[in-house]
Image 1 (cartoon, one colour):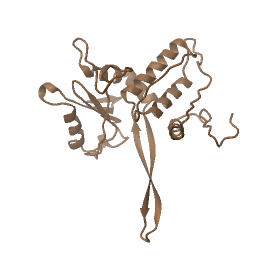
Image 2 (cartoon, rainbow, N blue to C red):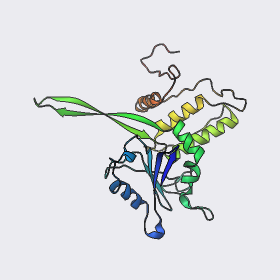
Image 3 (cartoon, rainbow, N blue to C red):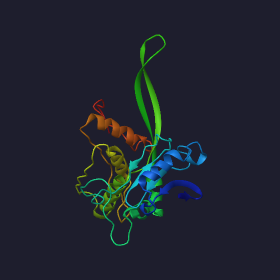
Image 4 (spheres, rainbow, N blue to C red):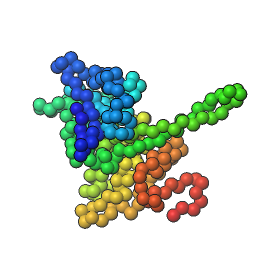
Length: 250
């Protein structure tokens, strides 16, 4: 299945059904082994921006097809539902709903998909440094730059949208504690929230915040956050980084 915007394909899905003896692993296998990444439709950052695999109980997602090297990430709510402490997977569905119905009801519906394209999805550069030995036997540093598409995972989309909705209703002055596990994309969640808050308006169309500060006490996360936030498209002067090297900042 392919979802298109003005005739341009942007989302592709492989839907599987346990009643026909196929599941999530079959959808991933199909993307990895039976779809040619060299075809124009599947070129990186060309047309399709996210590839989903889904069965009756779980969903997964990738942003680039690399054959057998294609990397899929879980796209589930968590065993106790979005925002609740629990394990992997999804909660049981109510009534006649499918367990994975959140994918098309909450994420891929028209207004949310347009919001994802406008406010979330982005390209991100990564630098990987390695030590190589040249033909003279001398070691030197080699920096490889790669790019990837960042598409929000379900928990990231859920937390940012909930915070924005609550802040729009209540205004400033409320404290929130957000729990994120290791490797869950904290930097991207913070960056998305920062940009949304900076342009958030109340019911009278007035800015709720005059400015947004992002503060961290971890050096690694600090650099990661700076790179992530500055990587977003923005008007010059709207984003400033302040580090220990800065003696004067305004």
